[in-house]
Length: 343
Image (cartoon, rainbow, N blue to C red):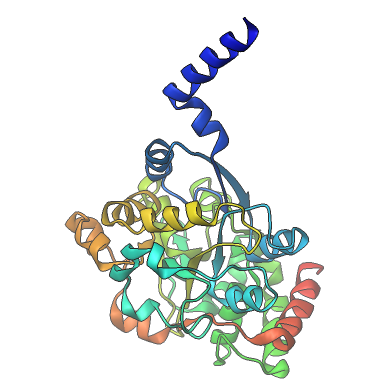
């Protein structure tokens, strides 16, 4: 009798889809608030899958965790472009099967074939954006230059992004150097500039960098353009500026870790997120530019032409994408980053 009851119960669970959902999981590792909730729920329902969404604060902590797990533990991991080559080189990433991601055909050509992954063998673009400046226009005069953040009047009011390459990219640009400098003297000069900035620095934040502005905690500082857009919904006086020296440009990417147990499902998820309606939802929900032209075409005009989300071409031309600088140069950055954070 027990076996009959167990059989009936199992049949009922399977019929309801419950057992299927319990046995099928997708482990996603990303920044907090980084994926549209509507898209996640739709994928769960469509595939009968449970998405386990774990978060990290920056690329460094993501890399450290994935390294500790030997590329296991997760099925889809998001990483900024400058970490892709390093992770692939160390065997932490699986090669992508493009035939399982047919929707990638709509990807903006300019985002593909970048230096960090010339054949997109290990990564595909998720979103791209800009690290510029934000300020509260009710209490701060308009900003135009990275160097404005060094003004003494902003003592203990500046927020910096908690990201080594963003922060050093800002200081390198301000000093007239490339964001991707491998020259230790140039990196040291950027470090010395950042040390001089410390009296103005209130906090570092990369989890939700618009929140310190909205809460009134910070009045000026660095900002990702998508988070600036999110903050402006609550605080219209929050401005976003592309610095005249040039902004830090970045791209975040889908990757599948080498130790994933669900690579086919991971490919299916990436392909799902490339559907035009989900690409549009990324922009609507997060305020970041998605990777396809088809997604942008579905947006209402107010979003499609929003200069915070989609900066002007002339402003973009002054910026520079963050690229992998190689292990030797990265070690130099990390040395000075640790010294800076221990000030």
